[in-house]
Length: 161
Image 1 (cartoon, helix red, strand yellow):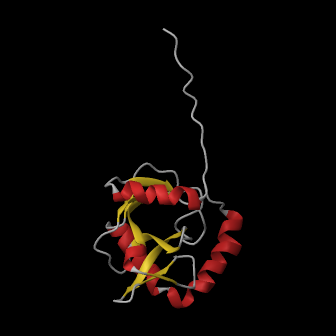
Image 2 (cartoon, one colour):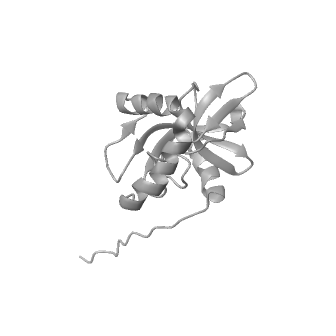
Image 3 (cartoon, rainbow, N blue to C red):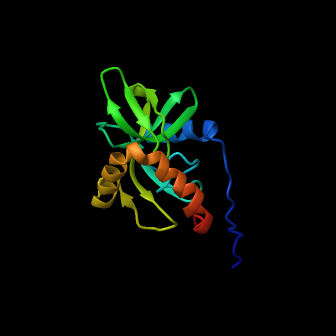
């Protein structure tokens, strides 16, 4: 019996093309694993290395990491820092500025992350992630200096996997 050629081919799409389809899948009740692109969630999540397991957004609360459409076809995966009647304020862990959107613009909710090529998930409701979130949030006043040291020193000697 002859075996077929089962070569795996990786294809990359722009976020503007891919993320609306991901949102449709989550709206249909599926969970989706997405390889992360960008540097806004540094230092703990890296571009093209880590993955997020996401589901349809529900019961939003401060500290959640969400996929939000902040402008038409412009999505971000950032942490909720404030929820008000007017909307939601988001900030990437590697960012100093904020973005704003409505609650309806929050399209997905991160259940957990696959970091550094591991197959075991770091759940966002687990002790490890909650502790990291608490500490990193409290360090906001000095985050600028920590991120600069990370970029200039840490990344120079320890490139992400």
